[in-house]
Image (cartoon, helix red, strand yellow):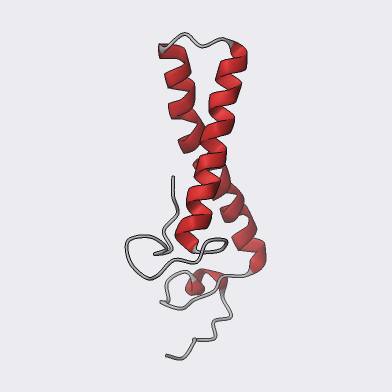
Length: 95
């Protein structure tokens, strides 16, 4: 499969193998990271509120949620743990 050369950034978004310019990718990447933090932290905050955790316990559960998400993402991408092809290591982001 050949990669198409696209000069206009908006056209690159609509091609299969398109690659938008870096100056357009960085804000989108930051938005993606912040959105994933919200999706990881919100359930932990809700759980801490429901169970009446104090501030130290709330901080701990949020940190554990972030660490487990990082471990799950690394595992699914196969960056640190090499696994055979199958349900694990398929490249999906683990949130």
